[in-house]
Amino acid sequence: MDSDSDAFLTGYKHVAMPDLSESRLHDNSTIYVKSISLDLIPFQERGLEIYDSTALLLASFCNILGLYCASSDIMVGILSVGGVIPSRLRWDADSMLWGDLVDNSRRSLDGSAGAKFTESELKANLVLEKDQSPFTALFGLEGSEDLHIPGDFCRIPVLLFNPSAGLLSFRTSSCLIHPSAADQLLSQILVLSVYAAQNPTSKISSPPPYPVGLASAVECLSTDARASVYGHIRPVAIATDFILPYVQAYSDAPAVCWYPTLSVDPKDKFDPETLSYGDLHVQANKLARYLISRQLKPEDRVAVCMDRNPLFHIVLFGVLRAGGCYVPVCTKKLYFLCSLI
Picture (spheres, rainbow, N blue to C red):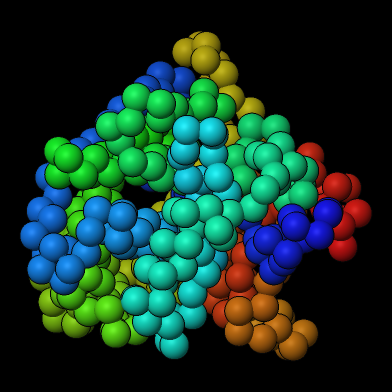
């Protein structure tokens, strides 16, 4: 890397938007746009002009992206007449104030914090695949005739702010984000931006009072309130405990059915390999105890490279129950990953 890109990317790890499409098949994906009206009065009451409001929306957008991606270091592409300007926003939620993040966002918009290299250089420096974008999302001001979204970015989310129409629009692909999730994300940005405008000296770690429909039931609600939202899901200490009622009531019932081969021919019949709830529970506990005996500490990463067969599910549950982080490793990239270690 040259000195400019080296400084810009120091400590950065590529962040991509998670799959929120609610579908495992993406053969018929489409590009769609969701919009929401934006009342600028709360911004104007704080003396914020259009440029400041734009910076506030960018900061709020990056923070929401960070919540979805479990990151506090987000790189977005700022759409401009000359192309896309790389912009990186970082924050320490426990110490940084909203006003500071908005100031950083403002510098990104005027280009003073942007890097002076191309998308291809970013991809090379981050060692990305050809179909990966270095940006988590794009951001721009809508209404300019010269604003153009490059075709290469058709699959990543784009947030557009139209100040004259008081409109906030979200453009994305159905193979990445379901329309209902896009509606929720837009509303979350709206609520957060108003809160940040009214509370510039608040720490980023202090979330706004989201309406129940926009809040994470796990993060923002009490146990009793959470049960009222998700009454069909009982509270558990860890995710793998969701199978415990089935272990107790249906110990011999199949928890996993795995077909080594599949066929579209209805005449073909295949018997799957199965794993019962009881066996999954017992074997996962054995593996968890073994990993702990090998000094596995909470949140230690455990690489797993294997077929998605019944044994894989035992390993997944065992790693999580031991307190570790399961890290899937693709067999096709195994040698490449090993070369980086």
